[in-house]
Image (cartoon, rainbow, N blue to C red; front, side, top):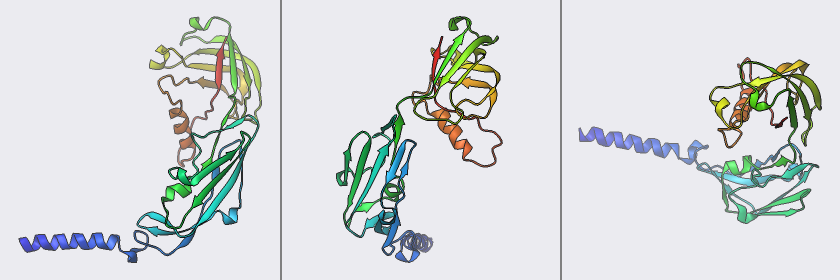
Length: 257
């Protein structure tokens, strides 16, 4: 019985050793190679850098990357009018701030990362490099109903006028002005301070590049402080195959009467 236990222990140790042995390649230590870094960016941002030189010589060490050279990586980000640099979402070698400098103005910033031989980085640090901006102004939707909004319920539509004015982000569908009707929607959400509404245009129209339709939903997401859950879910759904229909959505500031 003891021999069987020892044999099992030896086999387990052998499997662990094999998994992390350099002979396995991916899980062990690899020879030095050039890792190409492709910075990402959001709308409103233009990146300028030497694509051919934006690489880092590294070797794999059990899932981490060991830098094999001293090198300075630099890129310049230009921000279009109406767009503001977002320090919160920008990821330029996050976690290695002691090697990063950011200089420039509100309209243009230069990012520099000073890598040193022997530094240990994660693959995520290289793959998630990106500069992002936030819009200075969201689209504005004005809804003027024929009655005070306190009188609008979920059962009957009430006539209304709609005016949509684009903000910083531009949409090919452009601004909109038209007539239609509005009523309340939702169950639990209808009892919240910021209420959701269903709107029905008099004729089909594309708002914010959403395919032409008469019916739209105004979702305030009052119970979601991030205001991102629905948005991320729908955007992720558009990236998946095999789904027949995914609602299209965009952010908009809504003004009632």
